[in-house]
Length: 129
Length: 107
Image (cartoon, rainbow over all chains, first blue to last red; front, side, top):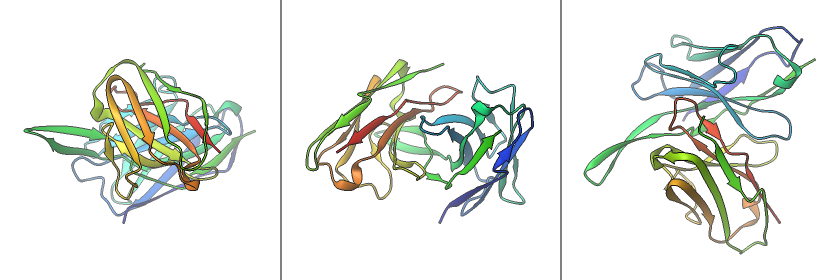
């Protein structure tokens, strides 16, 4: 059974750096095709994808936040850490991490790679004030 | 950046009715990169469909996804009380993933 749990400060001040940890179980980030993504949701607003890291250390970032974001994995601890620098009240949101596999499945005679986020943590709320 | 536009913003329906939700991409997208999620108040999103039409594990067959290119659809054949929620489409086809703005299905 795959589970993920986010942890970090509930309150940060403007200009500070936010560090969030996603601790997971039920899978390993050393296995091919495995990834962990971060997503956030400001109060009353839509979901916003932030970043993803894969088993091979491939990393992707939201272009609008790329200069402020860093994602890293600690496979020995089964953790993924996301840092967001220079926090602003507009960064107030619930932050989620999610299991993001790449599934290679046959469709007829061909193989296709499918990307999705199939198991999510419960989220952690961060207020910038 | 690949933009996803969902319509309508809100869908007002009754239990038992059919819901049709649209997701339009700003450029052509392989269907293997399109997913749909359901979110209820105070809860994390739940994966419903991936690869545009593949139901995730444990998802009832009243949920179905279709589409290709730039136009994708999530259909709920007969709404049940637990289906009233917000639905998001999401793409992983570019190196920067994006979500649509969501469609609220309300009673």
